[in-house]
Picture 1: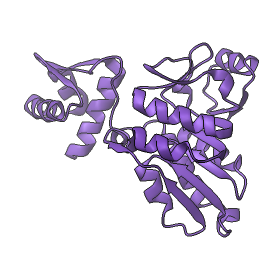
Picture 2: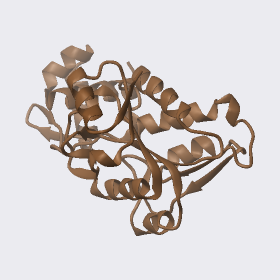
Picture 3: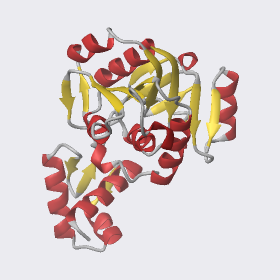
Picture 4: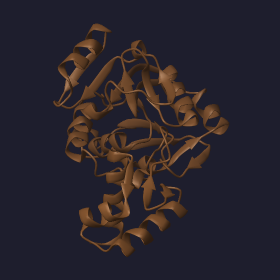
Length: 259
């Protein structure tokens, strides 16, 4: 197992369990305890975990893995959700995309849509996510508008007043949100308050709001609120979503698509 694969496995286990002992991790990954200790030390140096005597713990309730370590989680569900979201967008529209793994998949689904291979432009995409802009910039039929701001290494998103300045000057047909949590009572939320503020402004500038979230995000709360649930027009999630949660979102006025 390569170091990157081992680190990803360790971080996945840590997020799932909250705490991980050296011996436990060594047994799970079938490597030596000395290797796990080195891994924990190196991950702690990058502030991806907190080292403890004999193991490691996550940072706390606002803990968030860097985007590059989250891309493989629920990958097939995210790809199905992304394809369904892409189908909701019409040629010629102005679309806002927040950062995140699911919205990155939405960008990829848009890039291969046959009816978006030409146009002037075929689609206008406004995003504060550097990786999404990079994915789509090579598509000449898309007009890519990247907000200003300061890059956040965890998510590749630009945040701060420079991004606010651009978004306050535009109007969108639809905003597609990737969220950490979506709850009927508490709304859509992110881990980071600066990211939440940019996402909120995208919602305010859009005629309609689509949340793209796999079932693990539903019924959860997170630190920084993006918007109330009645701001959202459509939720696209996967078929593993709890039926009672889905019913609650529908009763709140959302159109829910499960794929």
